[in-house]
Length: 437
Image (cartoon, rainbow, N blue to C red):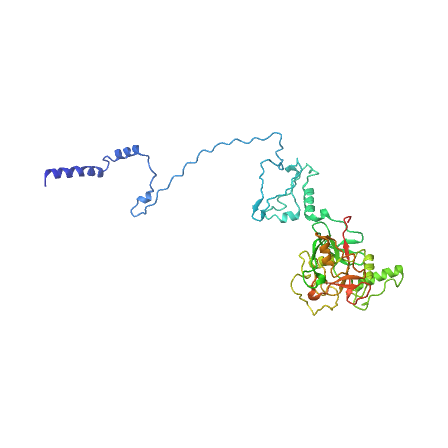
């Protein structure tokens, strides 16, 4: 080998030999490195052991920035620190969310705030047994006795009074604020509820004990487009709200009427009806229109108009039948001549809860009969008639009879002599609600 190659090799190997010797140059190299860059994280001594797996060095948590001191909010010295009912001007406001068909929600919140000046000192801890039982984590009574205080509770804002007023408001129905007073001799049936305008949904008459249902007023479809001609064309009539007997006048009620009137005016003032031997809960039959009107007058009621009768039978949707537009479903055999006890057929009931408007007895109305009554009414006025009670120029002795039509249609009408006794014709009464009531 040449001397040049040997010297070169020796020059390369000499630093390595010096680095392997203990204590030779190691300290100076570490110090130099320390000055060049910051010291990294310490290694886990266990990682230096032979065969140990390499683990990432843990990171030091970043130092938290120093908390910025916030200024204590100032308190108005004139404000009561216990006043928890002050409504601030920064309360959130809510807007109505509009959708394609109108508002989809109404973020409206009703709140009742105690009187101005009330504070937390006006409240007491409720120590009633019910309150303790409803609190799962409340301490036993012997370990947490009620704290006595010498300060009496405020009279106008005590918890007892506030609780009582809240319970009274919760128990009070909204419609009770606008209850309407009924005419003398009539009273609301307990638990029947009230309509949105304040009328009881069910009332009872002192005179005959009959229960009556509220029939809401509005635009009423009367009649039918098509055959038969005397029921055509259909017209629109506006009627006021009224009450109607939920069933036809029964023999029991008519007997009560006869007894009272005969005792006052003589034993033959009111004669027996044609079906006096039938059961007491059957409808009274065979009475003339005038006899029916006498009964209604005694009971402080009236006979219905045809438009009112159809409103009670067809409901607000103007159904073809009291139960809707479908076919009749009876619990037993029934045809147009069937006479039974009132309310025997549970499906023969109108949306207002009135029975036997499709079948059982046919019923008198106060309208005079004319086969062209609806066509004449339509020609005479371009606007809906109000409380229409039939034509005035029709024969006096012939009146409208409703019910028991072919197919049980509620728009079916017929004319019958009002002075005669018809074995299948009865009646029911209505109570019209005047403005003064």
